[in-house]
Length: 68
Image (cartoon, rainbow, N blue to C red; front, side, top):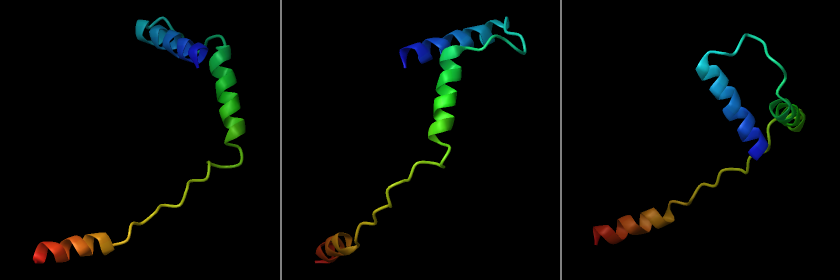
């Protein structure tokens, strides 16, 4: 991640300075990271754990206690 972060910061500096042309040389750290991420996500997005829904009983008990 250090090399990747450095590459991103360098690219941002180029863009902010206006010195970047439409096309430039390949940035190995960025290109390698993009290729690895595309390969990792080739089978679809990662599975998410099912959402848990807390029961209403604790809230019902609190409400009943509050009414007393």
